[in-house]
Length: 196
Image 1 (cartoon, one colour):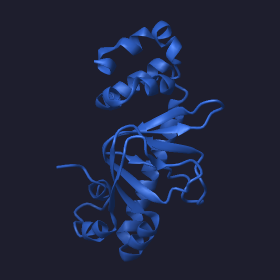
Image 2 (image 1 turned 45 degrees about the horizontal axis):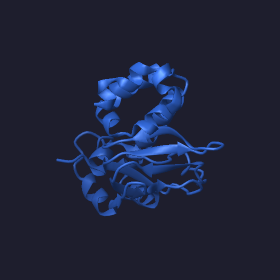
Image 3 (image 1 turned 135 degrees about the horizontal axis):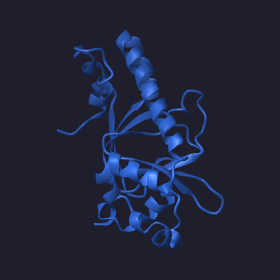
């Protein structure tokens, strides 16, 4: 059975509380974002929690001359901007579907309503916010890693996703330009894990 947003949220629930899923289910919407479509556009305000059931999307920061990849989100992960919704400010990047995305979403207004229905939801969403914050910090720290360290981290965490991710997006994420990739880091770009 496919992993769902409902199951993901309930992982943060107090042990043994099965009644909460009945509250969540009616608030979750399901959407399909076609390859090349946007999950979030620069200058949008993120107003929902988004869970990827299937597909890959990448986060791009705007640079001078060209945009660059700062991360990817895969099946079974949350995707979006969770530091932007609290102060309710626009994001400075965009998230684009690399392949068709099947997502489940829960609006922040629904989260506010759920916390009013059952006090357990307040604790669940606080823990979920801490989880998202820790993931953001880990992503920020990863920018300090060398290309080799980033590559090894990708292989360790998402070997399956690397094969599905276009080569043109892996190099820039690792900090390697396409013209330099074969000379500077041949092991990274000829490794059978990525390109087989």
